[in-house]
Amino acid sequence: MSPLIFGIGGSMLALNTIVSFCVLFSRAYIGSQKALQLLLIWLLPVLGALVAFWMFAEDQRETTRLTGDRFDPPMNPPGIQ
Image (cartoon, rainbow, N blue to C red; front, side, top):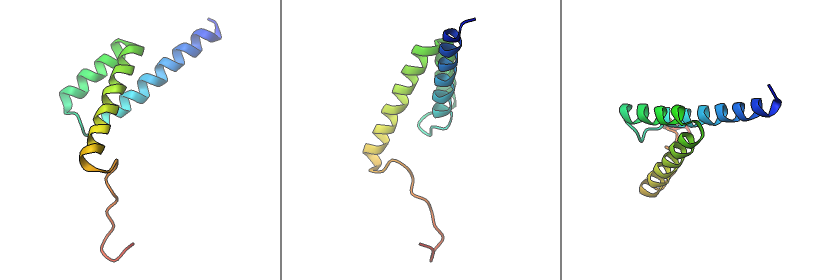
């Protein structure tokens, strides 16, 4: 097989894997929603990953807008700065 085929296949695999991790570790979705998005990502390799990533990004923007911060601040024990 040609290197181009391997490059395209590797890129699709990397994209699907990255978006899958984003969905799996997101707190914005419940279990069944995560399962459906993972099916979408892996059954429609490029389009599914792009749609799922777009939905993940929109949820992150909404969370940021509602809470005012992007990530939960770290919790330090009292007396430690």
